Image (cartoon, rainbow, N blue to C red; front, side, top):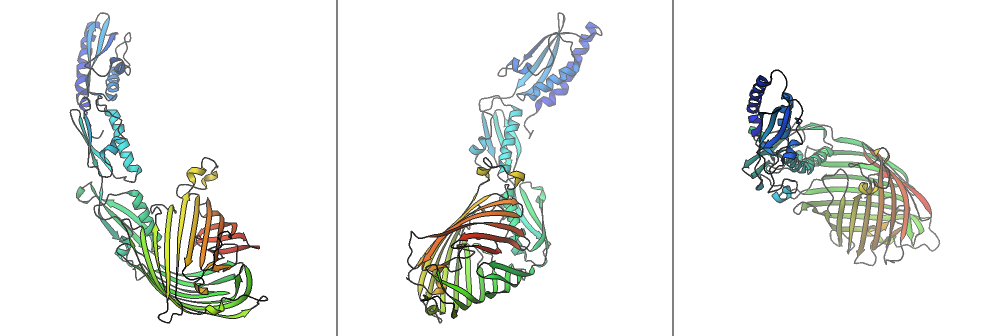
Length: 587
């Protein structure tokens, strides 16, 4: 045991010597025959009853005396844990020999204290201790108490914390705990990626307590950057100080430039596709560069350059340009298709953001955008078609400011918790802008693992879902409005399509007000496959009718691939079913 006094073992050989001497004396009196035990007793005990002590001995009255059995008896009494010394005395008695076990009880427990503990207060650790003040100290019971204390640390991720020593002064017990802290975080093996880029993903700093749960997920974020083929971890104790550990990260880099093929499908837009070139670690700084195009009825060409990393000390930023050319788009009014049209647009934007708050759960991002939109080629009009689209072409200069509170658990490989976003967009008539308006929206997303609920009612055949890949109930709600009764067409809230209200054409519903709700049940069926059932409801209009909402339901499939998660959804809504193909979760 961890330095709990063990005086009985120090006296064991002396007890054996006494035993052998007594045995030789008896054998000299009785000849070669083994003497018969006529009495078995205990002396020296006061708090522990003799019956309890003798309950573990094998030597019994009426049986022959056996040396090996006496040795086992001494060990068995000592292993009861209540005694610091155990001996045996043999004395001649009419008809045989009397056996008396001599014991010395441990002191009465007067006080139990802890030292070196900072993660938990002493009263919290005492809840793991069953040894009571006022009872005889039991070495075996207390060892189990210490195991429970150590297990509490380990279950909460402090796997290197341990009980280092136990000191006793009479009945006063002090448990000394070592909670190892971080010394240095050493990075090696990186030739291209800057050390600061790697180091900023490992949030530990000198003096922090080492927690394996936090470290495991910080390591997962580092590996998830996509910069490395492998990341190995080692630990060292500098200068033999077991209260400090150095973390050694050895990385093996890989190529971070990729050429990708984009494929998309929508019932209304048909098949589209294109190429992208992306670099996710430009200059070894963690900067991203992306350029590409999509061809089809909804053609897009874009280029972006960004630093996506942000914390309370580091600003994230992005700049980009997007050119789009949509042909044969449908324009709806009151859910009725009015005509088809073509649209061209050019967008330039630049943004800056940062995290804030004690745990960096809050962040903000501000973006300035310059958009020029042209609508043309109106065709396939219905009789008396309604047109409030073509009048809104032109230049829009606006800024939008988003504040986000992210309360998801950062140490899990899946989303759990909620995210709240609030956005304000202000358009101004400067730098060529032709419009002035203010629009604002807020959105909440919530993710709830259901494993603990489902395991009691549904058989989880083959372990389809587990701790690291649970069934998730995901929900999103968004509400938005504007200071203007009618917004420019390119600034309106729009619903319909694969990312808002599935089952309807893009822009089926639009206006200066919006209300949207999405619910998904995401059920893993294999490590790389996930089935999804979903329900969407919402509306967008200039004057919101709170009793008039449009909904749809459907099923989907998610497949994890080296290019990311592939999404396939089929939704029924409006007058026909629609199929969507894309990448990533909808929210």
